[in-house]
Image (cartoon, rainbow, N blue to C red; front, side, top):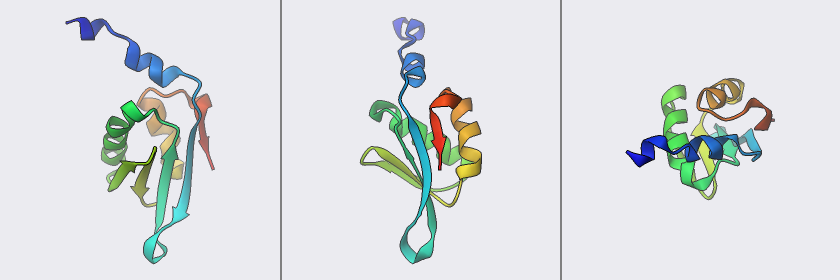
Length: 92
């Protein structure tokens, strides 16, 4: 019941951390989208939400989320819907 009143998760998302989104070529010249800057304690939930929203595979490890495919165009809108501020999201 006390957890329902906690706004800690909302405050974590609104902090001034920069979220960086970019693509790189991985094995077999396939593109993967990398998301960096999400707090480690929220990373697994964020990765799960992104994978469901984008209908792709991926993983969260070493402080970054790796998603299969090129999703840079959709990423800003999805992260804003998840509660992150648009000003803190940098898509390269």
